[in-house]
Image (cartoon, rainbow, N blue to C red):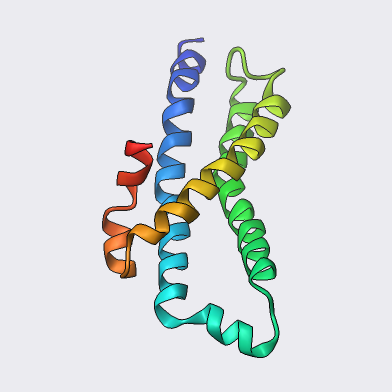
Length: 129
């Protein structure tokens, strides 16, 4: 009983920590692509910017859902109080949250010119906005 209460209190912290570490992947990828001129190369090959952004969004959503779904699976196996009936709703909320969250990361990636500085200071835009 006490263990499930403790796990239910830690659940939001685990989600925030997993989002923090995964946001470093998202923002450094964008800055590194811009640094290397990947969009210019894609334009020369005939690919559109929309296809690049859509493909990046889908890939980032898959990466975003890995720690979230693992946390929900652990909550299911541990029978966390108050979450056993709400797991699908929480997963749906996380999917809906991923679109504006990734949008904020995509917009804030323009604050950085090097992927090293983006990796170091990627949390600042999230804290400001």
